[in-house]
Amino acid sequence: MKKAVKIFVTTMISTTIFSLTAFAAGWTTGQGEDSGRWRYELEDGNYYAGSESGPSWQWLDGNQDGVAECYAFDADGWMYAGTMTPDGYEVNADGAWTENGVARTRNVTEAPDVDGQGAADGKDVLIAYFSRTNTTQRAANLIQQQTGGVLFEIQPADPYPSSYSATTQRAQREISAGALPAMLNDVEDFQEYELIFVGYPIWWGTTPPVVNTFLNSHDFSGKTVVPFCTSGGSGISGSLGNINQYCSGARVLRGMDVTGDSADDIQN
Image 1 (cartoon, one colour):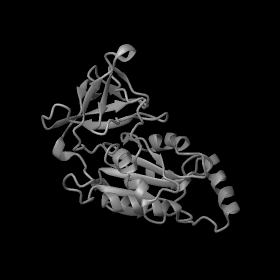
Image 2: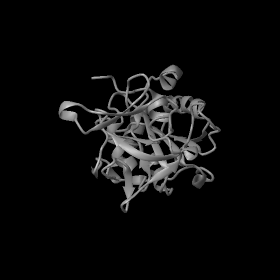
Image 3: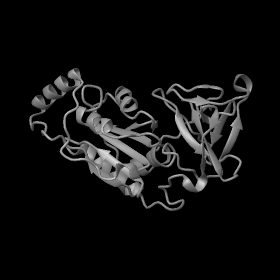
């Protein structure tokens, strides 16, 4: 099976954040037991694909009429059609995301663009992150370099201890209690951002409590959220439940563990 697209800007930024590509891409139908199923293949022979943690959502203008519909693809690259997607959204028989029976659309010129295919000033892109040891901060800076977005550091009003042991103990207590610790400050003009990257280290398999505070403090309805994390090996999947819970009404896209990624990894 062809290797699914797994590059940060193409998959996580310009692909999974709903930008419309300039590739000579197109729909292809399956053969044999996959007859009647559809993929959207790219010029290089790869295709959009989700993961075990959820589908990959794409705004695609397949017939070049200037209007894009939003489609979900499973881990093997097949489009969902006439069903409820694993992350809880209805798609019609043609695969388009619908609300109350009406397909959601977007003019191609409205789609965010971060890879040089048009206006990419980053004014509607927010990169919010929490970083105790600067590892996640470095990843956020690399994303900012690619998107031109606005950086915002999520900071607790009561800083976590310098001691690793004390920090993990406090974090465990807060997570067990479902606490939402106060933030030192908040992002200005949150409503102006359409695309929001949320970055954090994985603590006890999930999001740090202060990140939950940030998410719980804002209305994400109609926004697109792209989570990214750093971890010691547990990966991002265990944190996505909180992301979806606190970002109610948002389009939460497949995230990525960017631990150890360089600028080239994120761009390529």
